[in-house]
Image (cartoon, rainbow, N blue to C red; front, side):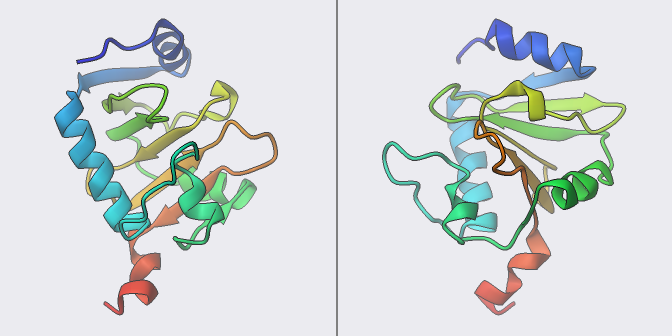
Length: 145
């Protein structure tokens, strides 16, 4: 199991986020697959590309920018998952906070979702691109359900 980076831990603390659990690599891989199956229909990110390309390559229905932040801030913050960029950290964290943390200033790729994957928020390292917000029910036109 990889130890949480000091930079990331400091950032979470600055956002008043409590890390409840740090998942091992196997569980993190399973959670990432669940996320892809929900929001990207199994789309495999090409080597050297970033995980949030599921949005920019139109493999998911989403909103971005200020509308995304508004919807994200409406979510109930009691508990959520945080996935750093898979290349930066192979761990997923189960967290709690009084309000949904704004990860815009982290300046790296980061994914936040509730455990049931009803919604997700993807922050990017790219200035002016994202963040991306999506909901599970928005994806039904792909699957026909």
